[in-house]
Image (cartoon, rainbow, N blue to C red; front, side, top):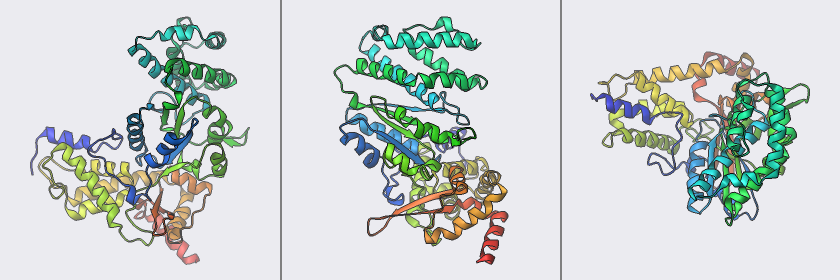
Length: 459
């Protein structure tokens, strides 16, 4: 089947693995039945709607598993309930995932809160600049900060450009400097953390002025992509950056005068800090993978059909008359779904790779192109696995039928890198059944097979 270049561009774009779906997108597919009945609107949404005070909630899951799409759904749902929702992806311009501190997140929240509420005030012809002039705390805070920055002599910041009326510019430049200047990063963070309480008080006062008669209980801040923060240990404090951010500074994270949702790394939720997090927030909501196989290793047809529906709807966004049998052989499509492990971004990445190896006149996509795509993405996972990980992977694969989950450092690291995936199903007794398995792309690697043979010989 020959198609023109416009069709191929649309088809290629439809399977962009890094594009979260906006709310009410026609290509979205309801996956609750194959995700252990997990639904963000029932979970995080109900907590916000029914709480009499501000809530602060954590949302976790494998990176690329669909959290951003779900958050955008929740944003739309809350806005329909007359809530004002501010959503932003923190890693776009605000934080550096390989080195993130609490103050970076606070600055990002401050910048987006101020910018959004300022725009709303301007739309209503309100003099928001006067609000800042009246904030004595802000004048003192900025005055102290300006003196500190002058002493640092940072070339990327023109301190003389700072004014009391441009708070979002000041905070934006600070965030950019922390991200781009590793030599001064810690000094600036220490200064900001010393004055964190004052900045939060300023923000809360501004929220109060901006919303006026409207209750700030109808304001929601969603901070996405914090789950991409790389875990690092500080030998001086004997703690990780996860602990510093989400535990030691939990009071600050919960102090904003609005509802807040923070995405967090899945490895944090399954760490020894889990009960501490529950005490300071509430049990974290976790988005599991779409079940494509049961723990006994048999195909789960319902999950596979869900993934096929995802592909079908996205393909139809390029050409509404395009059917799955025109796009794939049945074996090729099923194989692609199984190899994704029920991970949405992996499914899209595999699909896009298969399209790369398909010429304009070669539809349906050949099994050769599918095999090539699987092999290519498999190599990415192979490069992510260290030599001492193979035994852990073999044990996870062996233990999945017993639902044995070992929350040790190695498993948490492999959860973070998506080499291990988590699945859930709501059983007939309405109890969540959770297990983990190795990503299907890893199963065919020789080192994994050798580790399984070695484990079998020891048992």
